[in-house]
Each structure stands twice: as C-alpha cells, then as structure tokens.
Image 1 (cartoon, rainbow over the protein chains, first blue to last red):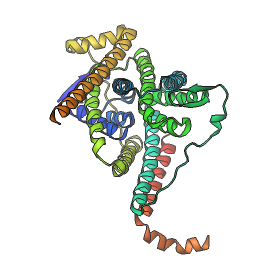
Image 2: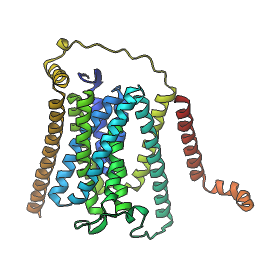
Image 3: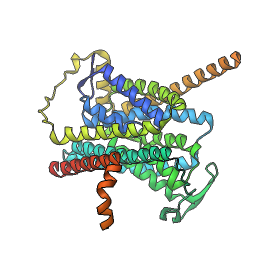
Image 4: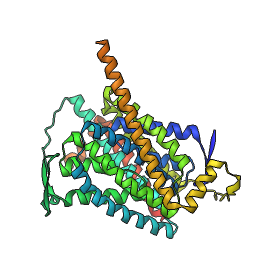
Length: 360
Length: 40
C-alpha cells in the first residue's frame, strides 16, 4: 500500500513506515533511548532522501518528547532550571548545526555527510553497548559485584559561574550544562535526532543528576532542540512532509507506550546486547549502501501540483508559499499530538488503577 | 610480554566468544574507516 509524499516527492509503503516506527518506538520505550538514530537510517533505506529523513524525524521526535515530557511533568520528575541551562547551549548548537548543514548542502555533500555521521555514531554506540552488555552478562554469571564511585570530578566542574540547582540538589558551574547542550544541539541539527544518547550519560556521569529526574529533563531539552530543528528545516529547505510525520508519530507513540509496559516486566541486560548487535547491523548496512551499492541515477520526478490529491496539494502549496506558517503549523501539530497522547495514557492509567482498586 | 604471547593461544581457546567479538569489531571498524577514505 503505497502513499505519495508531496514534499519528499517519493512513494513509501504505509505499512512499512507504521511497523518500523512502531518497532523503533518499542525499543525506545524499552531502553529509554529516543530512537531517532535508528528511525532516520530506516527512512533512508525505505527510499526517503536523507535531507527529508532528518527533518521529518526531528518533527516526529518533537511529538514523542512532548508526550514523554508531559507524563514526567504530571509525575513531577523534571528539573526545569537544569533543563533551561542545557537549552541555552542547545539553541547555539542547533544554529551552528544548521549552518554546517547548509554549508554541506551548498557543496552537494550533505547526503554523504549524513550517512557517514550515522555510520560512525551507530558504530560507536553499538561497540560501547556490546562491550558493556557482555561485561554485565559476564559479571552476572561470575556473580561479581563492583562498587562504583558516587561522583567523579572532571575539569568541567572547575568552571566559573557556579549556581544552585535545588531540584537536583547540585551546586555547579552553569557552563557544564551549556557546553553539553551545545554538543547535543549541533548533532541534533545535522542528524535529525533528539540526542538523548549523549544527553543521558552526560547528565548521569558529568552533571551528576539524580536518576529519577534524568528522563524527564532530557525529554524537556529535546522539545526545544527539535522545535528549532523542525522550524529551520521547514523554513530553509521546505523539507517537512506532514503526511510522513503523521505516520511516524502515530507508529512511534503507540510503540513507546508498548515498550514502556514491556520494560516493567522484562530484564533488559540480554536485550541490550541484542540492541547493540542491531545497531552494528544497521551501521554496516549504511556502510554497504554508501560505499559499495551501485547507485543507479535516481530519476527526478517532476510533480505537477494539479495532479495531486486535495490534501497533498494543500500541503505542497502551504509549504512553498508560506514556509513560516507551515513550520509553525508542523510544530503546533506535533505538540498537540504529543500532549494528547500523554493525557490519553494518563486517562487509561487512572482507569486501570480504579479497576484494580475495585477488584481488590 | 613474552609470557603473555606464550599464553595467548590458550587464552584465545578459553575465551572463544570474546576473541570472536574482538576480531568481528576490528573488521567492522576497518571496513568503515577504509570505506570513508575511499569515498571522500
């Protein structure tokens, strides 16, 4: 069942997009990772050009991070002050990333840069997760218990402008979260990912935040970074395709809920090793596609706007004629879907609790 | 160092999985680094 994407100007299989975004959503919910670093390569494999895959995945991440962040807001597990400091760095990092993106797009090398960036990120994360996962399995088998240091001090902790973060019970330099935000924003803009795989370890090991505040704060930062990435991609390149975004958001929101439920009952140590292998396989598939596959010259299909269906025609015209309005609409649309999903989840959760109380 | 080299074959036999993963990952990284240089 093929659907034509009016902005990306390619046809994609609707079932493939739904299933993949659902599977990536399950993995996200299960392991607490954003999933952007898996979904963007999958979109590229499905035939979506890398520049469009990056932009639309950023819009999808906006919806899922709004959904997750609202859930944490309702649970009061979010450090706004720390989050805002990371966002300040994130804004500059994102602008720098978009500028780099524009440079490589200008010299016609953006597709290879995106592919290489993914290949290396997947290789680094996959190798680290595989080594860690195997180590954990080995330790569990030999019943070895290791004591970890509570907090390690790096040079970054000696920076000036120290301030208090009451919710996290920390007193440290404002530059620590700003520098981390800068790196995350830069990578998010180029690769169309939320950057949780950098942000979460940095919050644990460098900032030293309490674990219960990390997922909510990380998602809170991701909202701002993905809003800027989405808007700049929509405004500069007109690359946000609302039809693709709807498919991605619906699949991933359902998947994340299923993944979070599964995570409550499944031991994830063995699964982490499997995820590492999956990441390495995706990495090598991108390497094969980039280095060895014969790239037959893809025909550029000239689309006559009058031959599209009314919805596609409206999306195409709005994107071309009113890019600012279209960008803002994409953002509001993703936020609405995300908040709606969080409240639906809360409604069902309350309903289940009431049912359980009645039963007991 | 010479003792380590002498014991290497027996260590490899003992840790077949780890050796396999080590060689697998090395090959993986060699492919992507080599590919990067040839494609740029």
